[in-house]
Structure formats: structure tokens, C-alpha cells
Image (cartoon, rainbow, N blue to C red; front, side, top):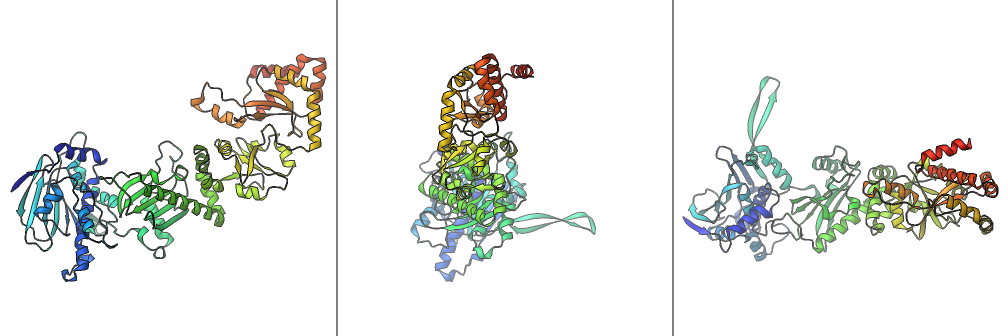
Length: 626
């Protein structure tokens, strides 16, 4: 027996790899199975070039065995095996990769896919094992060798007996501690679970003796049998041809893999080659998870490297505005770090993410065009995310999202897209009109709507808090600017009407100044309205913050105590009888005009859905009027 120290590496480095590189202890099994798959791939590659070996793909497998009494978990393969020198080079030198060397020395075709290229994965075994034994016999050799280490300063190598070629890795599982329960890695169900999670698509069968319980009507006592089960499915659905798969195949995979009992609205199955080569299988859910619009929701696609799951949720592959998408990406050529847990933020990853975003957009546009009912159902669940996306990106995502947006509309009371709105715009219409409120019913009672409707212009109804913030970011669509019906100037008058309004404004300028002063800074100005028809009064906003935005911002806890008010203007309808009354009071009773001004201002606030600033004063003024 030879006792040796780890070459050129210290215990500190090994401790760092075991305790720092890997986030979760459970991935040790993924690493060992990936290494076993590599060993089989190497021998399989040789068998393709040397038919005299008489080996076919069906001859290979990875075997798992649990011995609870001995506290061992064994991972065995009938791959190429290692001799004494290879054991020392591959396992005695930390971060030396036999797989990487093999790949560089051989011109490997598509039939051979080497997973482990970093030589570190093997050492993850020491996260759960107090001792690791490797027994290996190279293919075509008479000698077998045993490598053994407790993960401390060194290891031993000695010759041993082994019946068949390949490698056995025997883990002596650690004892439980107060913080860690290592017994879980000796449980049949847990090992099955980990294989399914990380190694389901390793292309060689992973087998284990599994105890099954059978219930019979003829016997009260269940019977138990041990069967040699294959734990992995081997062939990923996303690597199959689309014409091999049915809608049920896609839906069943989705409901099983992503724990959603409702079939998805649509799926995207694609294979991309070029600057970044990958397979993708993406799903658009029919409904939002219960925590979707909460800070606890975690976005991301499953990331596979050559069929081995690397990350459960890779957030970098999905933009926030498409965070509802479920699915996976499998790439052979992403640059991974040595633990295969973290991605290097390289150009390939960005290319894949951009392609994924484009695929999702195209699928949604296709759904909008071909199945409007299904798209509207989807939009009801996730449409808010598009508006948040436009707002949070300062409209940088407009090219992706603007054609996916929908709003309720005054046109037949239906949801419409911006493209549909613009296609129906009247010849003389320059702007896209919208109105904000708590509900469609509330919006339709706004006095500002009358003149816009009289012109025959369609109005978009914004009933979500985020709507106007998103519209303000967009500014325009197809060179048509957005305009709120509460804006100061809607430009709805004819030239003749504008002259009349200008003349009346000049004639009553002193009264307007008096009324504005009576409101003591609550409004920026009082003026004649160009948008009212039958109502006596309304409020409009001058400046970047609108009245609806004021309501939303004021309701946020972080803005408590801050002034987030819109710059308001009180607008009066010169055609309403109350206007003549105001002019008369200005000449005869300015105290009563002050009271009327305050009443009209409170009335205008109520119409806009704002609270009355001084309810007691308002009540007293009403009583005085009565």
C-alpha cells in the first residue's frame, strides 16, 4: 500500500472545494453520476472505433447500492476504468480532469458527450462521506486498483481484486450532527428523488434495487418485493423530434415537471445552432402562481448542461417581463465554472437569453393573432407584468412589449391592442386618448369624457395602478402620442371655439384670479374648460404627475409624509348656468363666491376620486347653501 499526499495542493484547498464551491450537499450524487457517465462514454467511444470489442450502448449502465448497516452508498459503472497512474493523476491531483484530457486527445463526434471537464466534482463526495473508496479496473486489464482517502491530507493506493472492468465509488456516509442529517443519503426514496432531479437525462440507465410494497384484495398484509429498477428516463423530451410528440406528451411533461395541475396555454420547443447551440422547451402557463405578484416569487428557467441539471432556476435566462414562463434550456457549450453550479456571464448566455425572449414574444403574438380568447385569458393572468416591464425598464423593452399590451376600450366595451386602436383612429385624430380610474364604470362617469366621445374618438380605460406610469414611459405608439382626458389641453376645439374661449378667459381673468386666491394654493389656477359639455367643473393636471398618479403614489407606505401632489387646475364650464351665477357673485358678494369656489373645488375632487380635504368645512358650506 502506498500512502501519498495530495499533489501540489493543501488541505485548505480541499476544504474550500468541499465547503465553499458547492451550495447544496445533495449535488454530490449528480457529480458522481456524471463522472460515471463520462467513463462509460469513453469506453463507448472506443467501441465505436473498435468493433472487435463487441460492446453496444445497451451493455452499459450505472448502478447504485445502499447499505444502511455499513452506512455506505456505492456508485458503480462499467466504463473505461482507471489504472494506478490514472487514479493518482485524476484523483490525487485536485482539479485535474481526465475527461478534459480525453476530450482534447480525441476527435469526439456528436455521439460522445463528455460532461465532467473540471476534475473537481469527485471531491464533492467528501461533503457527505467521511471516507471515500474508489475501486477501478481498466477495460482490457488484469489488474484492479483501490484508491482511498478520508479527505484530509492524503490518500492510499493499492492493488486489489475486481471481477469486471469499470469503477466503484464507495462512500462511507458521515454520522448525523445537530445541524446535518446525513441519514437522508441512505434512504431509497431520497436517492431516487436526487437522480430524478439532477440526472434524469443521463443517457445510460441508472439502476438500483428498490423495495416495492404490493397490496392484494386476498390478503390483509401487504407483500414486499425488491426489484432492480431503472431510475432515469434517459431520453429528454426536448431532444426528441417534434413530430414524435403529441400535445399530451408536452402537457404531461409540464404538469409533472413543474407541479402545475392546469395544462399550459402554449409551449415552445426549439433547437438553436450557431453562436449558441441549445435546446429549449418553454411553457406559457394558463394561470399565475399564488405568489406570482409577491417578492417571494422566484423567476428562472431550469438549466441543463448535456442533460444534467445545473440550476433549478436560472434567472439570467428570463427577463422580468416574461418571468411567468416555465421551462428549461439545455446547452452543451455554456461556459460553466468548476462547480458547474454557477454560470460565467459570457456572450453565449446573453445570446441564449435574447433568443429565448424573442421566441416568447413571437409565440405570444401568434397566440394573439390566432386564438384571441386564449390570449385574453393569458393576459388577464399576466398582462400586468408587461406594464411593469415597460415602466421598470424606462421603456427600453417597448419593442418587445408594446404590441402585446391590451386595454379595455370605449370601442364596443372590449379589450383592444394599441395596434387595433391606431388602425381605427379618425383622419383628424392626432393622439391616443386614455382615461384613468378605479373601474370602467367610474371612468365612464367622468365629465371630461363627454367632449372626447362627441368627437367620436376611442378612449382606452386604465384601471390598474401601473397603467398610467407605463403609458407615460411609452410617450407614443406608432408616432401617435398618448393623451389623458385629464390633461390641461386636449385640443378638441375648433379655431372659432378657441377664439371664443380666449375672449371669455380675458374678460373673466380677475374673477379667476380671485377664485384661485380663495383656494389658498390648492390649485395652480382657475380657468375656462375646453373639455366640459354638461358638467359645471372638473380638475386637470399640469406637469409630470397626474391626478391618478398622485392617488397611487400617495397610497404607497414609502411616500408617507411626502408631497406627491399633482399640479391641479380648476376648470369651469362657461356654458353651465353656474358660471353666470359665479360672475354675478363676483360683482355683488365675494364672500359667497369664496364659499362657492370651495364647494366647486371639493366637488371636482370627489369626481376625480380624491378625498375632500376638509370634510367639516365642506359639510358647513353645504348646510349654509341649503
